[in-house]
Image (cartoon, rainbow, N blue to C red; front, side, top):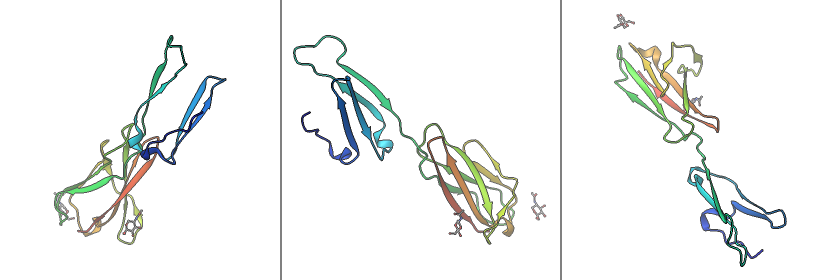
Length: 153
Ligand SMILES: *[C@@H]1O[C@H](CO)[C@@H](O)[C@H](O)[C@H]1NC(C)=O
Ligand SMILES: *[C@@H]1O[C@H](CO)[C@@H](O)[C@H](O)[C@H]1NC(C)=O
């Protein structure tokens, strides 16, 4: 029941609930980010008693997809074959990627959008009509993020 000393990185985000009678201590963290992914250790101190298991730890993993970075490989010119790559640097389980395409008038269009599992979209023999906005959504079961790539041919 002494004052809890909270490190700067956790100030305002960590709270501790200790139920001595029930033998339960709960550490609650809010606004968690990837930085909080680590082992958390709990130790129990009973004066004059060092039997048993005084220390245990558990791992916490916080990995929503980061905002994906969308890049173009190839030249955005007539009759080129190009690829658009979408990649979240962070995310676990590994994010899945999905591309959608909008015309310059911002109307969604049906392309044969061939996307590989790792977020690569191939476009063949591009023309002016290929121009528009290409949105990639990166998603895992913790969250999603997207990028918006403008292609001008
Ligand atoms: C690319 O498209 C143009 C016109 O749309 C067509 O004439 C040409 O044959 C196509 N090239 C390939 C490699 O498919
Ligand atoms: C993509 O960006 C363009 C240009 O900024 C914008 O007009 C369009 O609404 C955006 N699309 C989405 C789905 O965010």
